[in-house]
Length: 186
Image (tube, rainbow, N blue to C red; front, top):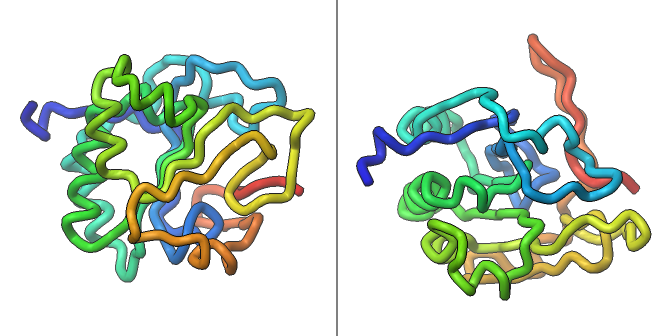
């Protein structure tokens, strides 16, 4: 598929974050999620409704203009609901030396069954997958996870467990247009 036709429905984004993966990274939260985890941290991102529709080319150009990024992180909503377009974006980030972190309510074994369009291609471009639904009763203070059932899958050698040691648990960002919290509540 031509990349100029690949669209992303973006709920929100942050040009620079240190709480959403190792190093300094761009974060994209996708709009729409098939899961309805009680106490979801991003309830406004659950509905399948048009928010900010952008081409992969547009997001890639924005990414390239931000200096000194380590990589990109995909969260949601559910990133695998937009796997085809995200796979192309992730491919570009990785070809240019960045790494990719992705959260999903699906478990890795479910994604590997390839019942979701584009899932196999997106998995090929992810360096660290955080899988599993958020379960309020299993809330935990773990790197990049909200509950103890969620697992870290290091899918390449670009990110290792040692890279997660210095990641802040929470982060507040002030921009001219908004005040934004990201990270994992204690």
